[in-house]
Image (cartoon, rainbow, N blue to C red; front, side):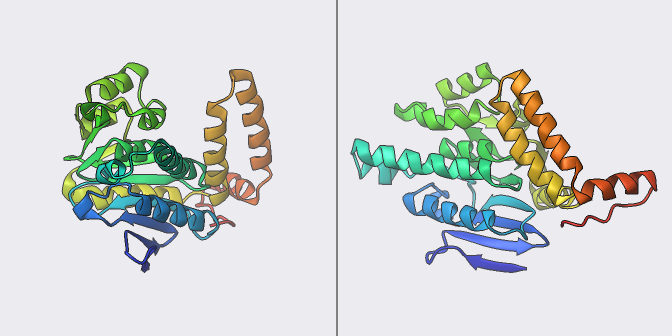
Length: 265
């Protein structure tokens, strides 16, 4: 196990253990807000993981009482300039897309609150596990700002009317509601959050790395395609996947009633 800061200020730490890279937002006094420095740290860490074939799965966690309170509003008010805001939101969008485009699954481990761009961060991850006490909101509307960029990720997770309700009211939903609406996968008692995330990462890491990487890339791309194109793309992807050594091993193991021994871990 290794744990290292990814920035001099340790705004973000990375902990690697048995193929799982845990990135931890480490600005609890600022409710882990997505400041310029935090966005840069996240982008750098995600870029490094993308090039690291030893990583099988990523967990995005946070220190303190909040998962992430969204953008740093004080920093934003200190720079009242359209070009600044355009650059900031583009930078944030690039981080969210880097999560989606990472070749391995990313799991949000959520405690406390996840608001505005913090909720966007959860929605951008492939999977999410929340503590029972966690709460979620896209609350920009409460300060006169419609959460337009969080809406992109949110609307790709929850039903249209659910998303609009959150965006137009800014009201919090609890973890169970977030699970019911599709924003998170699992809810765990607060003291069992670590165990629930470990269980999920272990299940993913036990699968063929080739299949997992193939599946994540395929799933994201087909969502934007018309039905006929999606099936054509999926068929081609599956045909290529069938030629992988791991598939031959997996099928043989199934037929022989034994655990598979993956060639690509």
